[in-house]
Image (cartoon, rainbow, N blue to C red; front, top):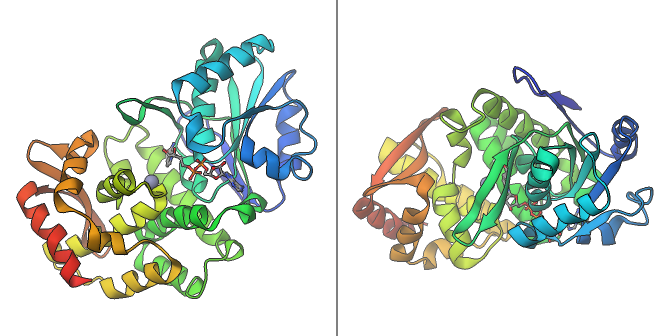
Length: 348
Ligand code: NAD
Ligand code: ZN
């Protein structure tokens, strides 16, 4: 399946399917005199003799999040310059969201910007590879240094997803679940049905595609997050606090944050979300739902307040459902939030 962006210019295609890497990559690399590969070390170790066997002399970069810092970024830029990268070269970034974020930023910086394509290798990257945001982390927090820089193409070969650890699969699935919920209740019901017993990568293709389409639709209209792109942060207000405090993978924390958003939607907008059903689904698959019971209200509020995106004065912003299909940015007073965080423990 090829999905094309519809910006005014600089459009690109996201190709999603099994076993597409070799052919799709060839059509791109043929167009450039020099191609430089940046590959996550863990991905390279797993696939160097199979799917990546035709890639010679790649720059193998630190795996996952540890690549998203100034020093590995600068080292990689220096390496590219040492190898003679030119303005008309191509950078191919192969890895998950972290490699994609830092690799995209490198492409945007080196020689003031060279073309790049992203080959995502995680389930979570169905989210992170769409929307053209690049970033590294600062001493002051995650993703605080970055740019908007679109790739020339995204080649999402789903074969890579079968080697993900269970933890990473659950994390990526959190964002798949979020996209389904943002799309419609029918979509999320159908996702939960397919994954009732276990989450199998082979069953997720249609949901990955609909998630990509939804995200693309939103970011095309609102690239710089001044309006509807904010809705993609469903579950992220509490999610980021849980992720930070308990050091669990992003999408797993988002899943817990989504449950809290549904609880707030019931409380504030009299919605009728079946919390027990969602809770049981998450618990069954091994999401750390007990954190919702064990979390410390003060710690969570303090962290949510530090997240500049979510907070104004005494208010913390949540994405809630004010109606079955209507999302609303809702500001909640700290004191009320304290009560909600306490009361969800009794509800679950
Ligand atoms: P990741 O890139 O850190 O990968 C997670 C782990 O899985 C790493 O250890 C990696 O080496 C390993 N891995 C990657 N592919 C694998 C494979 N096929 N098989 C086995 N192991 C594999 O994490 P992620 O969850 O893909 O992405 C998270 C990052 O994405 C965060 O840094 C987050 O800030 C960023 N993000 C960006 C956006 C955006 O819009 N740019 C959106 C969401 C998240
Ligand atoms: Zn997220």
